[in-house]
Image (cartoon, rainbow, N blue to C red; front, top):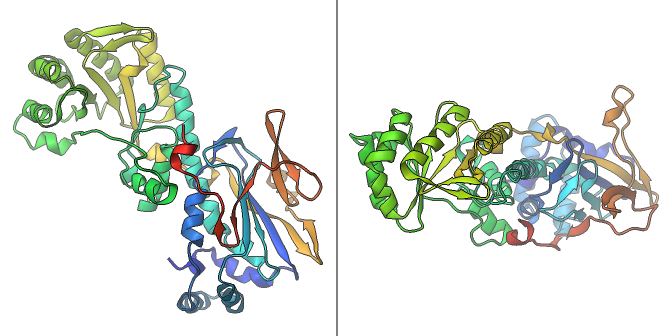
Length: 434
């Protein structure tokens, strides 16, 4: 990807619109919601700034942008290339942390008087931190819902979202954001992202699982299930079997509950039955009762826990439905540990920048050697007023508050992560997840 092409079209005309200046300062914040779990900046910084663009990149970008109808800052981009590094100081809160909305999560400042415009030019790419942060925040909220019913949440929500996102890059960084909160995923490419960008070995896990084609290819549904047990079942192994290819009730009551019952028990595996259609508020309680009759259950402090068998529901799952299901079964005396969930589109795709109101705003400009605060304050919508000055965040009496770096002496919660081409702080994934 040509670095010089990854910006909004109108950004190419901005270099000549600023007054003569020696620097620009901007910040990123989430304006909506109670809190966010910040994640993904390291991935973006490594991808954006790992190498300087070439003369060929400048020519390619110039040809495209001028044909596009816009001016191209060839002189500025060539001077930046000759400098050999990106003259920026980027600070941020610690990745993986949970922070209130409306505080700066990232600050960006130019460090060379010639390149104040660069702070604005990189907004488009840098603001994409909204996506992994939004996934991590929503996934975190799902975990908080589950913790009302059980402390054992590591594998409670499985990522089914890889096929439902708009790009492999979204699957990579979005899938990894989910793994801050959970350990289960079928988004295999997120493991590559963890290894390449966050120094992880294996960030998530999965189990052998059936799909409808591996069931319907057999003459008898029971034979498909039996084969699955023969191939993968074993002491301590978990395996998932989609069971609604034809008649889910029959599969639960008769195939699993009678015909293959002894085979399941003798295998010492944990069979995870997956309904993939219907009303979960009806089918999950039915499944629990049916399996309890045939496999039995063990009483636990958190309720009845099925022997040998569990359930995973992944069809149309969202945060509200998770809460409804767990509330329903626990009121019925069942342990929440009987049921896990899979989530696809609601986890990785049904979100946007406005989910938490992410914004990147210039808030100070250096003119005549002095930093001056700048902000927008539209009379038509006062809620869109931006912050002014070179700002940071201070932790005071357990709460974060916004402070002005030029007016206050305080310990800034935002620490330098990138300065003049060097990545100063590099997180290992295991150090920022929980």
